[in-house]
Amino acid sequence: MVRPMTFDDLFTGWKDVEEMDAQEVIFSEQDRAEAMYYILSGEVELSLHGQAIGIETQGGVIGEMAVVESARQKATATTLTQVKLARVDKGQLKVLVSNNSDFSLYVMAVLANRLSAVDKFISRQNDEHE
Amino acid sequence: MDLLEVFKDSEDLVEFSAGEVIIMEGKEGDHMYVVMKGEVTISLKDTVLATVGPGEMVGEMALINSDRRSATVTARTNSQLAVIDQASFESLLRYVPDFTAHVMNVLASRLQNAYEIIEH
Picture 1 (cartoon, rainbow over the protein chains, first blue to last red):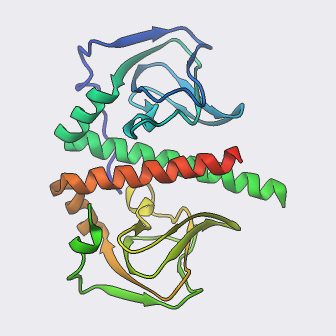
Picture 2: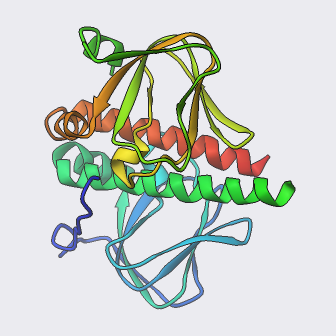
């Protein structure tokens, strides 16, 4: 398995930091995926059509669809607590991924984990329909 | 990235007949494949998530985030696949930046497909 890593050091002093209160929507399904967010502190819930698919905490990443050109967010991200987020726009993301192999491995693992979570969601839907 | 070109001289090749199961959801897995010839389907129970052909990869999830197979892969036609073990996968990721970018794009597009299945 690709080992989990944290990137708190990489985002120490990051200029584009957003602070939000609990129960705020960071992005919604179908919003243009302009940026990915690295969670510096707090908890964020990801949901699909109102059903939770996972919770991300400090060191986690949300909005990873931004790695794709002209993609849209496919899930809704809502803060569960006060949160502090490092906002990584598409251009910055491209630079980080090409210059930092550890970070690109991490983003890859984030995509794989999300894909597992969404696959499980589809399996559950299939079970409910049977 | 042209994976057919990268693995064209691979000596670790396996063949499957149409209809044969290549990867079974839930089982342990320590290798992935690149489809060299033929077509395979990726499915969850009765839902087909994707059909992939020559130059495309399958089975990478078990090497990235768990040792369990997240979906079932079945040969749709007679197929030939190149086998990539965990050690080769990790060294490709580590030393071939294009490969990492490629895997990232593959995962992102599978993720997009999976979300679209839920939307419909």
